Length: 540
Image (cartoon, rainbow, N blue to C red):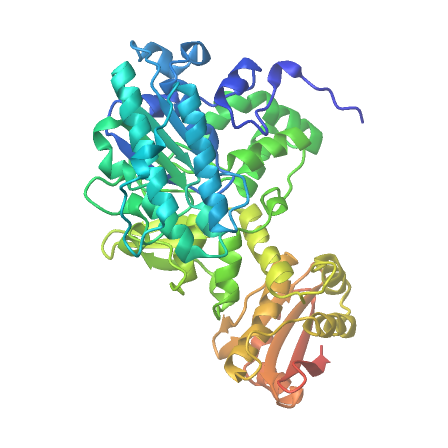
C-alpha cells in the first residue's frame, strides 16, 4: 500500500539544531516558556534525563535564545514574553558524540571548542600567561592550562563587549562514561570546569545536561554549583511530550497511524501510551512520552521497540557485568528512598543498580509514599521493559564469540505448541553459551540459572511469575500461552522428580483447575558441574 507523505507535517526526527528545525518548518512542541523561566531566574542549572529524551534539542534552543536569534522564536510562547533579545558570547561544549576513550581525546575536544569560541569572538590568546603556572600533584596540567585559557577568553570578551559569557555543556558525563581511564578523565573534567567557580563574575548563564551526576567532579561541588532541576516539579516536563502536548500537536499523526493499524483514535492513543508514555520525574509532575520513540512510531507507522535499536548505555552494562544482580527483582515494582535517589552520584564503586537504572531511563516513578519518603519505581512502558530484558539476555548472557543474539521467537513457538522437550532442549542450547559470572560460587551460579529462565519467559511476552505465590508455597515460574499453562519448579543437583513432587504436594496447579487450557507440570534439574540443565520430568 502506497504511503502518502505530507511535507507540511514534517517530523523533527534527527534534528539537534533548533534553528535548523525552525528554518525547515518542522513540527515543534513549544518548550520556550522553560527557556524564558531559566534565563530570568537563577544563573546555573543542571538537568539529568535519559538518553534520547530531547536534552540536546533543548540545550540548542537555549543556544539560539542567547545568540539573540529572535526570528527562530516567532509565534512561540517566548515571543510574547521576551522584550530584550541580546546576543551574548556563547561557549557551547558538545560532548554528545566523539571518542573519549583516552583522556587525551577529551583534552583535544575542549581545546578545539575553545578555539571556536576565540574565533567567534575575535580573541587571540596570549600563551605567555602559562610561563609562571605551578601545578598540584593531583592536577592534570593540560586541564589547568585550558581552564586558565578559558578564563582569559571570558575576561577578554567582557572587556571588549561588556557582556558576560553563556556556557552550555551538553552531555557533560559522556567523556567519563566512555573513558578507559576514568580517574584521569575526572581530573581533566574537574580541572577545566573549575572555571564555573573561579570565573563566576564573567559568566551570565550556565546550563549543563547529562544522564547522572558523577562523583568527584567540580561541577557538583562547592557553594556555587549549578541548581539541579532534574527532580524539580516546575521542570518535570521540560523534556518529553505530555499527553496534552501529544493531542495538541500530533492529532493528524495519531489519526494516520490509527487508520493504518485499524484502530480508533482513542485506541491508537492508548497504544501509544502503552508503548512510549509513563515517564515521571517528580511525584507531582505530569507523565511524559519518550519523544524520539513517539516520533519514530509516527514516521514508521508502527509500534516498535525503537529504544533498543540504539543499544543499552555502556556504563549500565559495565555495572551489571561487575555485580551479581537478581533480575527477578524486576518482576514487581520496587521501593527506593527519595532522598537516596536525589543525592545519588555515579561512582564505579556503587553496586546498587536501582538509581542508575532510574537515571538511564529503565525505571521511573510509579507512586510516592509521603510518610516514608519512598518512591515506588518500575518500568515506564512496554518499550523500555522489552529493551531492558532483551538487552540483558543479548549482551550480558551471550557468549563473547556469539554471532547472533537471543532469538525469542524460537522459544515462543515452543510455548505456543506445547513442545516441552523442544523447549527444554532450547534452554540447554542457550545455557551452553553463557559466560558464567563466578564458576566457583554455587549461590551465584544458581541465580544466573534462574535469571535466564525469568528473562526468557518475560521477553516471550508470556504470563511469567518467577517464584509465583500460592497458598501452600511458591512455584519457581508460571507461564501461560493461549492453549497451555506451564508450572516449573527448578532444583540444583537434585532428581527432577523431587521438583515435580513439590509441584503436586503444594498443589500449585490448583488455582488453574477451572481453566480450560492444558496444564503442564515440569520439574527441572540444573547441574552445577555441567552448568546446564541435565534432566527434566513433565506431566499433565
